[in-house]
Length: 216
Image 1 (tube, rainbow, N blue to C red):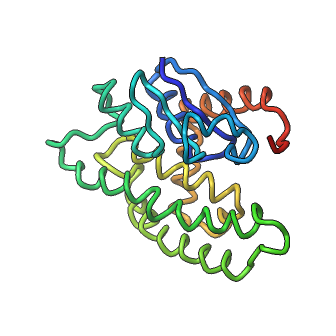
Image 2 (image 1 turned 120 degrees about the vertical axis):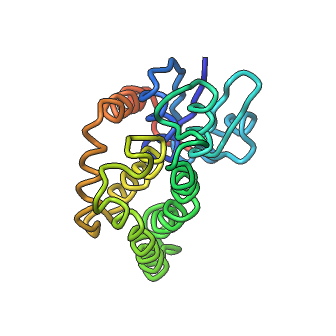
């Protein structure tokens, strides 16, 4: 069985959502955030101390969008993955990489410099600059969803999962209020999916067993 290490609201929600959309069994291991501080035993599994970590037999993966691609490719066929011979394949792959490298990266800096750093190290200017960066890059999603329900191949795919998580994170860190109308409507559609709701429920249930964050 696949084991997924997850923190509430973290990028590991991408593979959690993917697993639920595919209806696959998994073992969800919830950790306090950040685990490298509050769950130091985790470093023996993932020396980076980052989330996610997925273990599938001898395979270990730490990149959230890559895990989604792996799951769909290895345990498919599934309509969540766009095949190489489909017209939407290039767009699908581009969105898969865009999700973390372009959208989530600036969000992590907003989160860091508004919430995670000690009070004296927080930096509103850095946070504001990277918030603008994120919103600027989000114009690509605004344009893509102007006349389409989804991002690739005219159906819901893993690309919508990985981009959808970036929209969820934007809500967590206070940027969703600046979404354009197309992104707002797109995000509302994604949240109505049964797979998304099941992933939220699984996260909430598992979070109940996470001890308060006390440095180890």
